[in-house]
Length: 316
Image (cartoon, rainbow, N blue to C red; front, side, top):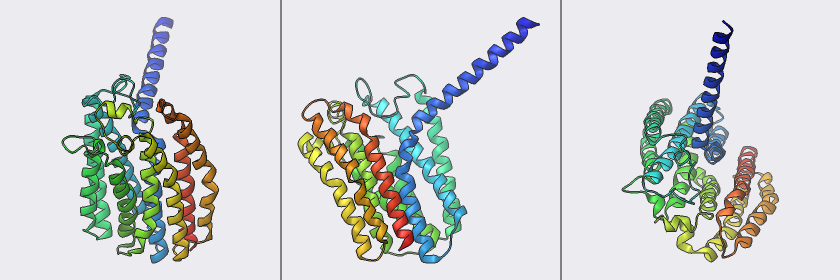
């Protein structure tokens, strides 16, 4: 009896350990630290809608968050799957979550997950559009869904054609902010586009920095990004002016009465930007792969400035 009990206990422990490892693998594939890129534009659109209409449609907003996070996760998984198929993430490349390369999740499992996630995203879109009575949202949903899938999927794979930042700017900046406003407010206000501009540059800035460490490995794999098209010198200069442009756009919102005085707190995040610039300068003409370990600086910049922008709009 003792041996049987011991065997059962061991089996349960192994099962629990296996379940934990599976969860960790999918968590790694999902890449949740980057979900702040989705949260800020959605919250900004909701905040402006609540302010202009006086209605807080929390249930609808929760559904928008769910659908958007599901598609964000699907985008990450599709990136892993198709970059693996095309050999982009092989060798020393640090792109993607590396779950396939590490043998944690099979390409087949990722394919099944993509079908489920895009299905959930479509179901969410149907409910959101039905509740908001804004059929024009279907145009945004279809464009965003195709952009999500064809980021690295052939034959389009625009992320391999130096267009990643452009589509992220449009989808995760303009469409998420304006689309959320349109759904929640059940109407249109063109001022939301002015609010969306700085957050669009912010989210595109995350992708741009993430491409810097792989500036050489991406090019060697045949993947063209904005960074490796520019070359190291011009890529470094572009990053230097990226966030000052964002801050100017944020301050301009105060000048046109779309944001309150806290928007000036964005200037307090300058040290984070300077730290990132110093890291890039220190890399010089050498190996830039190690810059990947400092991507947290840009994510902190995004989070801090996103919160400042949302609060400033709420207080205006």
